Length: 233
Image (tube, rainbow, N blue to C red; front, side, top):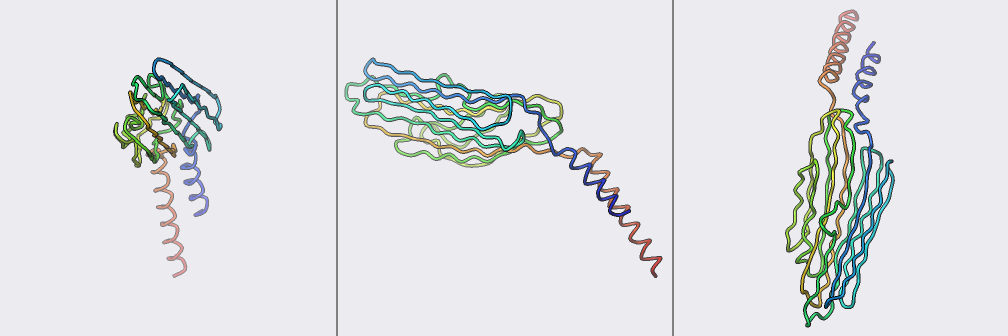
């Protein structure tokens, strides 16, 4: 009896283990470089309808200026994954002025994930961003669409680390997006780079009825144990 009750309670909680129905995901990158009137623009995009590993990169280079943007995403399942991004630029001698380097043109979403929450739960994760070189202009990460996540970092340095956790409601459609955006005008002899890693997971929160069944089950186990002791006495 005891084993049956525990097994039923555990099965009830485990039934909410798959918290997500995958809808789509996409990665985008963009880079722009101009130097004394010459311009180069590079963009790349890729999308998927199944959880998979994929990535894109863009490199724009003209005369003494270049900018790059790399985005890689992986899915352990529809409920977990990682995002890795690198962005930055190199500017040579700009004594004549007129240079511009920019990543993620017009704030596109570098990584986007759309899904349906199949149960109440939470979208949680950790992030780590490290800037190097002359970090002014690299700026911090941005979260867009349905999640108001604030990433540490400033316009002067994107570096920062932390965690986030936002609630999900069963049956609702959600889109979570992350973007980098860096720009610098009229720099000279400048090298800058930022690297970011985000680890995220979606977990279910058991319904009140599931908790009630678990508590009732353990209560019945306790009653059965007491009765057994009374019989043995």
